[in-house]
Length: 117
Image (tube, rainbow, N blue to C red; front, side, top):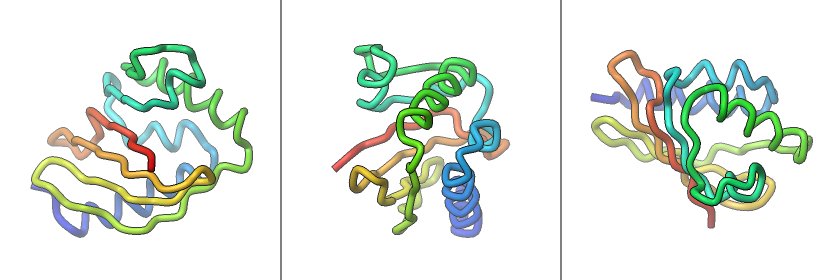
């Protein structure tokens, strides 16, 4: 079960990692074989499925995204808490985002899905 304390700490650390643009710091929140879906994947890496798996592929995608958007910053708004998931609601340079994270027993993200307004 995810606690409010875990959710708050994850949200703060995750936003800070993204705002630092340090991909290794960002990836530290994820399991090695995590899966991510986002409509931005199709735009940035040309994978029409919008889904990538594993730290190597997703790390490459994020590095490319940060190269294309060097001004990228996230502003935390709030979180929604589930039993094994967390939704972070935040503002990006392109508008509002709701991102869903599912966690393993070690507190690492195993699946995430970014959803844009």
